[in-house]
Image (cartoon, rainbow, N blue to C red; front, top):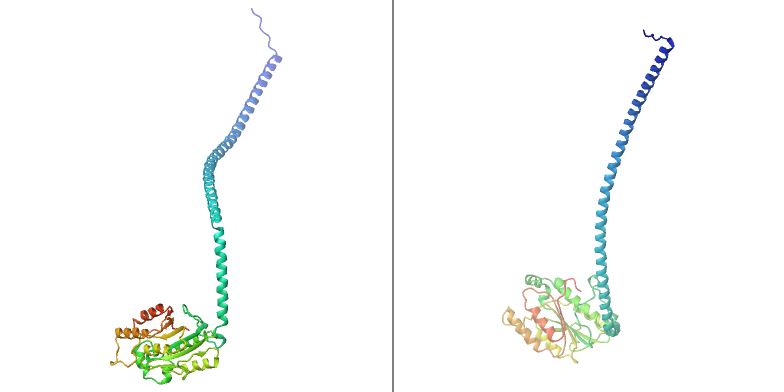
Length: 359
């Protein structure tokens, strides 16, 4: 019979202790491993979030890089275009400079000569104007018009014997026929103050202030007859240097009353009676003549008849005398401007129709 193993207290306790120790170790290992796994999972989630953000940043950076490359390509293209344009402009500038240099070389001598001649001409003109200014009648008397408008466009001044002819017929009272008829029945004082007549007398006043001091003059008023503003001096030349006499003539003229018709024949005939003959005539009028040497049979004169009277009067005018016409406005005389303009052209004079505020 087998021998039974003897049971001891020491042996049982030792095994229990060893079992408990291994169990404790296993429990500790499980507890530690579980905590490590939880901590690792938390850290992995944070790292994955950072990775996602970094990936998004990388993607944005790549897109920005693509845009930058596209912009850079566009800038490169524009720069290339600008370089090409600059090259073309540079070539055009060089071509233009070459042409300019060629033109300057070809025209340098001619340009210098032309400029020198222009300077000489301007100096000669300046000297002539200074000489004329010294000889102006303003040394004898002055006339200041409205707004100090001392000019007369196109009118030719000068000469040693100057004749001024002022139309003093009734038509010089106004521009309109109905007003002429009305003013013709007014007092002499009202006739003298008529605006149109005042402008005509101011024109003569202005002309007298422009006469060269060394020249001689005569001033006639005419309607159906011819009268000097200084009665008794008809057919005689007067000296511009005698300022008192010239001033008296202007004062006498301003006392004249416009009346009667107009006879150019008589006034042009009186031109031939002056000796020597004038070398410049200034005619202030407003229309074609209404009669010849004698009074017409009818009370009215047609336009064609007035043209005939004008042509007949021109035949009495001596040749070679410039006639400068200052034509005032007048209703119902459309052929006057053409006739007097032709007279001025044929005689190499001048023709103007001044504005209402002149002189």
